[in-house]
Length: 259
Image 1 (cartoon, rainbow, N blue to C red):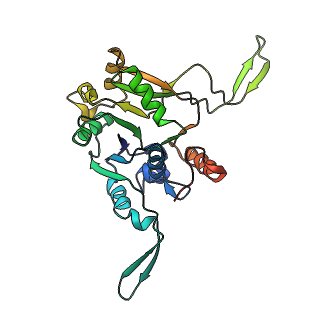
Image 2: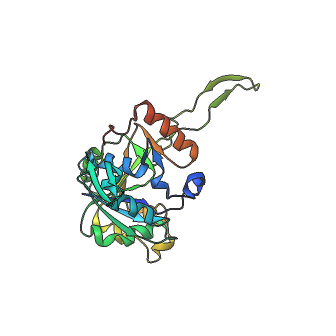
């Protein structure tokens, strides 16, 4: 199976860094978050990727065109411009980079990569989220249910503590950032059948994948949710990036450290 990755948005909520680079190229532990996502999938046997480019997509192209050099020690002879590579950390991955437009919404980006996954079941995720999700279990869950689409449901918890107030206004308890509040949200990490493209509207370029297409799939009983209760984190803001950086320094839960 291939994995499709949305990597074309403007990343406006983390503009402190995205004004210089696309959000998937913002680094965690010295590597782009996009690299971490590829490693997550590769650890579960996914070796082929289709990346939906948009904003500053050329920077993502440059990264993969020079991937061999980005992940190796080099000796450069300045007189001859000869380059000697020492201990390259190349990976057995195949990456297709597709320009899906600057202003295109996610349904349109998905539509534009159709030729690269035609007739295949495939994974889909966003270029800014990490998790400890078992992707093989996700795929098995999808196959067992026999529907067009499976999404991963997560409980992100609150950024804020919760006060428990008594009838007279006295604070009875304080609960720090509750997680299990009964609400589930779309955490990405989809598995999709080839006929999912039938659910994209004619004006897909102007439509978010998360709205009309998913709503129609749900209305027709073709969308199921795989519940993930382990680690999940999306890098929406600078604070999120700082939290992921801290987790990496402590021993990142989402993947082993490998070159």
